[in-house]
Length: 370
Image 1 (cartoon, helix red, strand yellow):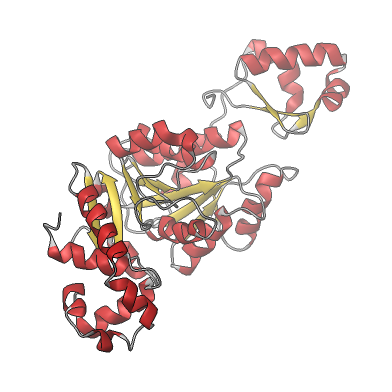
Image 2 (image 1 turned 120 degrees about the vertical axis):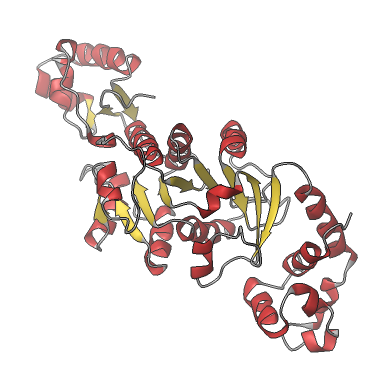
């Protein structure tokens, strides 16, 4: 099928191997729209790229890829959005290297709404995921669309929170739009396609590759007015997103954590370098210039502390909020290891305590259980 020659021309250029976004944009500045560029003699296009790329431009492989993309775009709820389209996200036009086109599945109108990126560790703690989900829900209910990358851990929690609120969520993929990665998030991806929107700049069928995700991260930050980091180690990919946000002139936020937690060190480094410290949804909303929350009931999301119930006296009173091991709890509570282990199991089953790697345990706040 080839029912849209304008879109077909965009796809032909974008799907040609070796013809990167920067080269494509130079061609467009010189010749105008893709149809005009493709109408030129190949010798003229040779000033922008190599003979091998020009050969690929007119190859059967590229023609087949174009037909596949057009067929995909013709399905209900699917779209290929080009730089020339009114629905192309305005904020992406402000970044240095906006993609020539975006594959989208779902509610494309969300791409024009005020958004906040929420990212963090794939190996998040239970408390970190609860914080991300609660904040995302509160901010979504305030009218912000939540942007993240569909990874395990904090990303998935942010998407769940976004879907639970009025603002919904945008998932930016590091694969083709038709590839769900990781597969454990397949159900979440399907829900986002139904009630939010999935987007990707990568061709159909593109598998997860290490080099894709840093590129994906610049779009996560680029779509949003700010970027909130929830739990990140010093080597976390989330810090790449935060750096991209700062370079793009976006606000950067971070939630602090325990000084003993490796997953707090990335957030603490961001705060030291100027990121806004976040304890509540209000901390974010106060910093987003020009954004007025709609229908928003004030909440302290991740930090509201319920008074302990009578049943929580005892071991929980000795845990504090930092991860702690069994031996330390024995010393603090004056209990035997067997008593502490039994009580920890009860609290874990009740959703009040989470077991962490390395034999550590962490208290969970009420109202933030999963």
